Image (cartoon, rainbow, N blue to C red; front, side):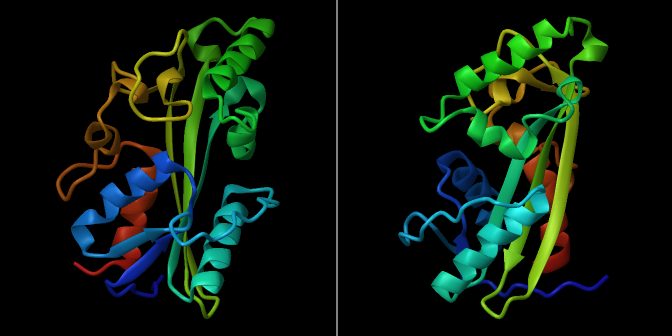
Length: 212
């Protein structure tokens, strides 16, 4: 499948989430883009009315591309807990409330797991999902999905990362995302497979749409 290539230049990261913006900027840095966030451009945050990660990523990317007249890259991502039927999923940010209290959101997940008696490791499986959408002002878009599986741990461990990172232990690792540096969490280079959901989606995006 052929993808439209993105020529280095000005690119909008269609997010107001500082953690996401930081990680996407780190991943884009080697490719020579002049990156500006939707927040820096005072673009409004569109209401996320989609029922999938893909729909919400496309909604955000297309809104930013249309408003700015520039290509825009958006991320929609979430934490999916198997025992909770995939919740909080696309509603991950909403579980943290208007104050973005992810400590509260993590406690909510743990309380729900405890109420189900989900104490054994095999009952505490989860995944992070990220979908990147690249949209152009002419309406063309490209979508890339990344996932990483692991265990839901309690109590949370680590103060790095953001969101639900401190309660997620990726398979094959002995530290949570909250205990990893951003470089370790991304785990991606030309010689190393991507580790995080966002980096896995970005690797597909880079392979499909970026030169070099």
